[in-house]
Length: 259
Ligand code: COA
Image (tube, rainbow, N blue to C red; front, side):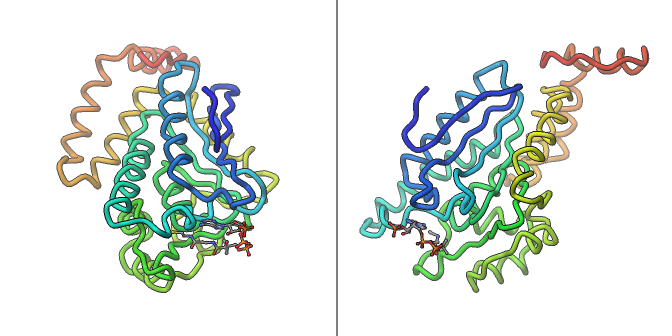
């Protein structure tokens, strides 16, 4: 598919989505977020794709937030649609059965931070800066920043950053558990792909099951313990489980097929 505001590429089973509005620090306007959603669907429907990597173009920003110029004159109703539709896309990332990693190459502010937090894993370059500066604009976050920041760093620090609008350095983000790794910018994509390639050697159905179970921990309408019992049992019906256990007993490398 062709897109206006993002670039997509597929290599060695990894589908890369690059936010591509560098002159606007990859600010996330409505169209860009919808395109990310469409690209994710494309990746999830492609059996050659094992994992998804999201990054920003340029060396300055992953995404500097929702596009302020787009919503500055919005009515309440328009704001509600913007927030609901964006949340829909970000939740689809969180629920993606294939792992999604954010390679954060610079500013990840507002919607940029929220997009990174919707991904399953985050790797940051040393110059990355995170934050939810919406209160500077007279706003709350609108793409679940108040929810996922709490999930990732805990209530106390989340409230501090949400209320002060302070930026979080890459080192502090790592200390807080907001990012999995911090690496020099030149190594960002390499490290991100290395992690995804490792996951791609595991059983795809089991990976999807792990994602579902972990998400269930945070869902109000699901019992995570019950979800795990279900997913564990379902694995026993899969060919991958038979292959994985047989390979272990035969002392060879398993060849998983996602069935
Ligand atoms: N929405 C729309 N445009 C944005 C943007 C956003 N969130 N963030 C940056 N831009 C645009 C700037 O308006 C500027 O465009 P211009 O060259 O046409 O004037 C361009 O991107 C470069 O940004 P600039 O502010 O000149 O870069 P900087 O290095 O001085 O500052 C930031 C970088 C990230 C600190 C600053 O751009 C910023 O504070 N952005 C807004 C962050 C924010 O509040 N995000 C939450 C939105 S809900």
